[in-house]
Length: 229
Image (tube, rainbow, N blue to C red):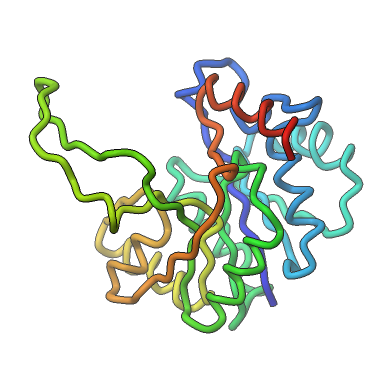
């Protein structure tokens, strides 16, 4: 059993818009709707859990789910204060569905993930326990101090940008999240928690199209990508 946890509970502060970024329109549809369609069409995904703000449940039913006519049932889960809390809520909700299976964790505001890359991550995670998408850093990396001066130039050969989906054997990611709750760890991605318990995470090459839409500039780029794919 493979279950997808799609995170759509963020506030979208960096977007500087009154509307949450996951609900902004992209080619006439909310961004999160585009993401749901990819996972609904993916034959490797059995169940979908969409994590949303509690106060948005009626909006999500009416404006996102009903117009899509999805083949798979989408289970709505209420998010938490931070991303980490929202993922944990998704893991708890999916517990009965997943059992010893695989969980795919993905940001709803990454609508251009391909079914092929989802499948590659799932296959890899079944073998290795944990697998994420990433891309090698294309630019020179600098460390800069608080005064704005360069302190160091980092060798970029081993530096990658992490993407989602991040895919795990369920027992492993649940263990990592339970450990984080006990220790009070706060991180920005799921793989970091698995690393914290001493497990290795495989990275496979994703796509530069698989952007996370967090700013107005990203939204402009997303519209340009739509015209090319």
